[in-house]
Amino acid sequence: MMEENSISSAILSLSAPALTIIQDKAEAVDLAREINSYAASLRDQHPTRFGFLATLPSLTDIDACLAEIEHAFDGLGADGITLLTSYNGRYLGHPDFSPLWAELDKRRAVVFVHPAEGPVPALTEPSMPGPIIDFPHETTRAALSIIIGDVMRHFRQVKIILSHAGGTLPYMATRIAYQAGGSPFLRNRSAEEFITEAKQFYFDLALSAFEGPFDLLRRFAPRGHITYGSDFPFAKPYSIKGQADHVRAVGKGLDSSTEDGDEAKAEGWEIRRGNALRLFPRLAEAGEREGNGAMDGVAHASTGVAKAIVEG
Image (cartoon, rainbow, N blue to C red; front, side, top):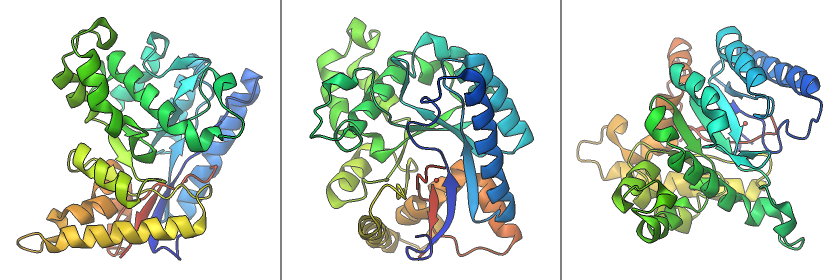
């Protein structure tokens, strides 16, 4: 898939349901350690080709998560952490998760948020698969929880990437802001304050690089906050190719519109490569050491154990 779509590098990550399906806490801890060690070994074999976002046990066991964060960053050199949108009915802004955010803030960590089944799965109509219909809404709920839980205000050093173009957040943000601005629901934030915080997230383009959602995201997200994503292997190959081609076509149009033609200043180049390399500088440094200067963009691919860099 990487060669077919000219992707230079991928950041490996474990997708939903991650380890929440493991009921035994000790087993979940051991499996997280095994997954992260395996991902690190792939990175070590191909340092410019792969990076990885560490997997944690369920956030219902905060002490185990803090221990795995220490091992992942200090022992394995992880590029960041993957979190699901909710755990045991609690979204990511819940006060119980403050110790986790504090540790990630101390480490200036990159956190990738991937949707999972919500707290009330019984409401899902069987003919409407949750990953297709509900996951974008779960991402929006988690983003809202992060904002009103003051994660963005208290832990300013963490960089949070929302998958799938932020779910429905770019579309819903103004509705939320101007219906609830100034109310206890938004912790008395004004509409403008809410919008400002919503735009502090980073957004990948997994399953969202089609014309409509891509255009909407570009109008919503600040420059520098969008990275390419493929959602491999869950996205169909023809879908990945079509979206990658669209990102390149739009990006090259944006690049050609720059006054001096400086690639490093071009918005299209940033979406394909530059923004992600700023989030994951190790890949840029490794590429320079090995003379791999041809990398052109970073993408997200979720391989059950994935994110990527688009070339060309």
